[in-house]
Length: 144
Figure 1: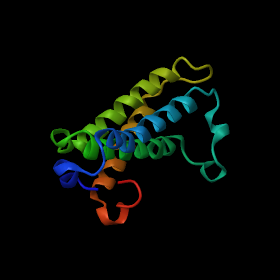
Figure 2 (figure 1 turned 180 degrees about the vertical axis):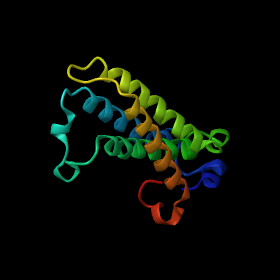
Figure 3 (figure 1 turned 135 degrees about the vertical axis):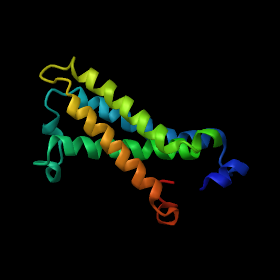
Figure 4 (figure 1 turned 90 degrees about the vertical axis):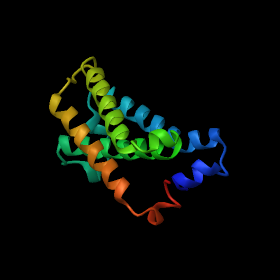
């Protein structure tokens, strides 16, 4: 799907568009919230992620959130917001990162860290920007 097709009237209903693009954002945000609720989230990491820097993991985590927000703003938020999809994706993911850090301040054995928030914003920026630059034909049948 592309924006032009959506603007002209996609074969998908408005509800289907919203579900296809916004449900992954919400589901992933819920997953982030759940993992942030754990006192020792590192214990839930898959083996191939063990040993990576905490800040790098934040960048990966919010890079994916930035991609999901970019997709949603670009293809399901309407043509007026689609023009600003990159900026909106970075802002939304970073604001969510801020709420996540505040949430962690109330989790036993966790604390709020400004460097984590910086890594969240950096990851969201890089993820959304890279996704924006990807040729659409590579991903037409995957996430777009």
